[in-house]
Image 1 (cartoon, one colour):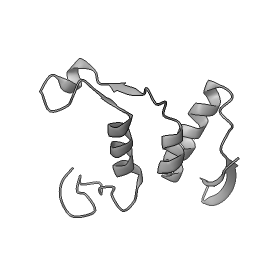
Image 2: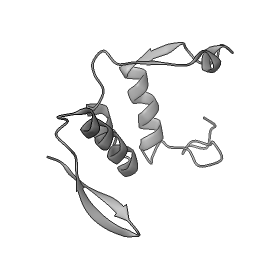
Image 3: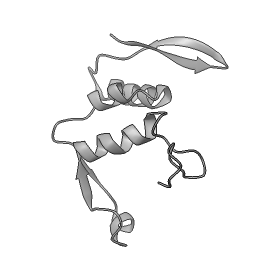
Image 4: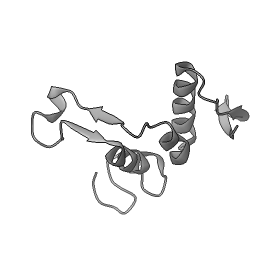
Length: 99
């Protein structure tokens, strides 16, 4: 079991990742991985056949694909979760460009 820290009212509380015995454990680990910005733990949750399917509203303008696989999902979330790659609140990347 992997241990992480989760802020609780300004204090760090030790929280352990679950063993993925049921869907609630998967969702728990997903939330914890995002809260801790832990890319490696997030990627452990993806099935090898993972496919993210966008809604028609998302892809109808041609800027977004209809779906993507685990490689694109990992890349997108690495950019979100890795503090060295994540953009600031104005939509700029760490390198100064725009998302």
